[in-house]
Length: 80
Image (cartoon, rainbow, N blue to C red):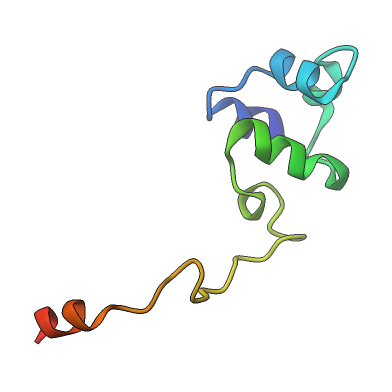
């Protein structure tokens, strides 16, 4: 399951295994889900957010000012 999900993003299991320092891609094929200790590395290679890779470990991020800035006054005025 994890293999097909990751492959859908254009990453080959062999390339992922090499990136993770594994001897072969056979370990990737056995994953039912991405192991907890590999989530951050898989996210770095694939660009798949950790919340999608392991929602049981990383619940969806709540909006904050940093990732969802408040509208500027000009944006507020154009909405009226």
